[in-house]
Image 1 (cartoon, rainbow, N blue to C red):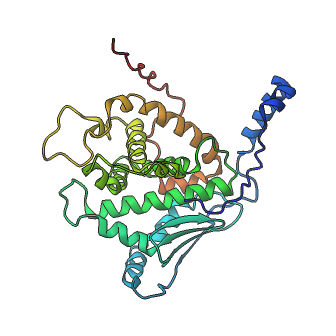
Image 2 (image 1 turned 60 degrees about the horizontal axis):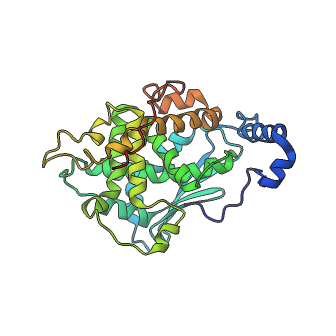
Image 3 (image 1 turned 180 degrees about the horizontal axis):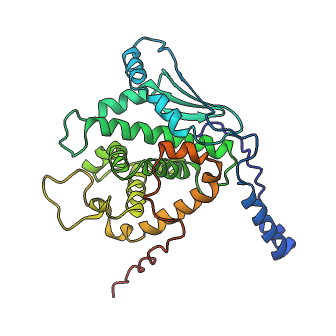
Length: 318
């Protein structure tokens, strides 16, 4: 969630009337200038600028949770994960008691509420009936949340231009970061993150007021399918079970076969566009030596690889 965020990207809006007045050549110049706003890292950008803090719980209700996060070095691992990004200034990652279950970015700090982490922990079954272990469910959702908010922070700090909703971009950034851990770890994290939407899967028909669709975030199941689609698009072998509708059994894993065939056909393209954007807008701001020590991106498809052909348009019934 992005809170009270002032735009620092220096992106002006060109009206249609002005665009006509400028002419095609000046509009092209403006587009090039916009692309250059996401320039490679400057000399004053440095890695290892993530500062972490476990705030003392105010009520004492979450002291045990805070201690467990510390013992598992939860924030330290996030600090290591995002330490390879070269930033112009320090960025804080704070875990604290908030009085509500939430997480957000407000310059220059990402806040993760103890209440939110507690909800994640309590929402994951201790047993593995759904094919998801408790640790994978908690870890996947925790990293997905932190990476989502860090996405907001990096877009803002690095002046990354966005076309589309910031919340959607932060979701895709978080998914890409989880995929960057290597095949097996990525599979565990993606399935763990998707577990957060389990209640919607078990109750597929919902009724919501119209204003629910006005939220800056996508509807929960849209976010769920986007998560599965990006993962499937990255590697149809590793995540093939997500779109496997041929071998369904009563004991299948929770997410097996949940990606509709119509959506799955275009997922390679969706991942390709995300991969292209990351390589050109985000990767230039990463210290590659530090990134190699933490991330394993070599298995992801090359950014220049030819994607699948777009899916056929739906046939009109006579």
